[in-house]
Every structure is written in C-alpha cells, then in structure tokens.
Length: 235
Image 1: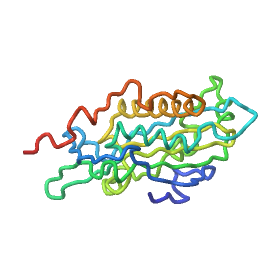
Image 2: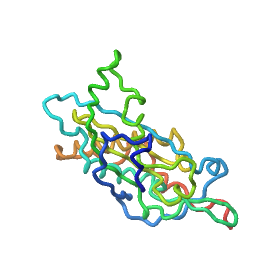
Image 3: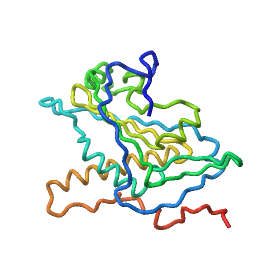
Image 4: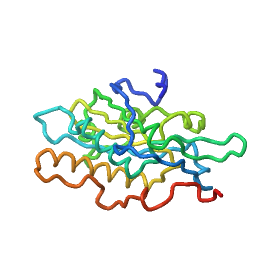
C-alpha cells in the first residue's frame, strides 16, 4: 500500500513501519468468488477499524509482549475460517455488481511497526489508567494501515483485511485491525479479533504442552464447509 506523506495529519513520526507481508489461509483450498448483497454494496469504501491495546506489566523487559511470528500463524489459521478476508473486491464495469475475487490467493495484510512513545505513560496520564484513542499516535490512525477514505479504486487494489502490530518503547503493544465494511460488519470484526486472540493463546500454550489444544476457534463453526460461497442468484 502507498505510504502517507509527512504532512498527512494521520501520520506520526514516532511510529516506524518495519515490514509488511501478505497472509493467506494456512490450509490451501480452492475458493469460489463471493458475490455481495445489496446492503454490502452501500458500504464499499467504508472501513471498520479497531485498536486493541495491551500494556506490558513486566517492567523488567521492554520486549514486545506479542510475538510477531506467532501472531502471523494465528492470523493465517483464523483466515481458514474467514477466507473471504483474504480476497479482493472487484466490480463489473457494465452492471456495477461487486464481488470478492482471489479468495485464499490475494491475501490479507500484516504490518510490523515500532513506536518511540510509551503506552504506560499514556495510561498513567489518566486517572482511570485507561488509554483513549485520541491519545494514541495520530489519534490512533498511525497504528493502522494506510487508507484513502471513500476511494473505491484504492479499495479494489488493496487488502480487505489488514492488521498492524505496533510495539511501543515500554514493551506494550497495539493491534490495529482494518477491514472493509462491505465484507464484514462490526460484529463480524470483533468475532474475528476474538478468534485470532484465542488461536494465538493456543499456539503459545502448545509450545509448553505435550498435548496441544486443537487449533480451531472454540465457538466458531466452519462456515466454509456448511454454506455455498457461490452466487445464490446464478443460474
């Protein structure tokens, strides 16, 4: 994705992007294109953004409390259950009909970044000890992927789902989730976040266990095996 200019108000010089990569479902399968419904078509270029904040309670270390490689593995496994998030939006120029193509091939995005600021100091500035969105770098926008609001062409060229892992100077981290509303509403986004977190914890426990947990979200059925992803209106 193209970067923002230095004069863009959404940038923050304290945040440095280290690397970007594409994440696809861990299980290689052939997925059909997914056609969108009428409600989905109304929110083509509108994203759902969520920032999750994790303070580092171990003051003896400033190493990030979320392992990037372990998170990428959990991310890929979660996409096995949410494969459409690894596709790309497309549109028929003659009819305006939109669908998700290249499912399981184009990939979701993962970004690793660092921030020179300290999350613990941001939290300590509030009597409640909470971190507010307005206090985060760039009003939290610097903790998310680059995005051009309401630009359909930008949306069609880039990932539907992006997660940015930002490690702060204190060892605390944020995860910035960005997903296009046309393919996943707020409830679906929070379900995905919950399932990625659960899979991450299971992967971490598996390192120290002779009998690792099953790597599947506890409360999520495998919808890809229960419903057809084909166009329901096709002949």
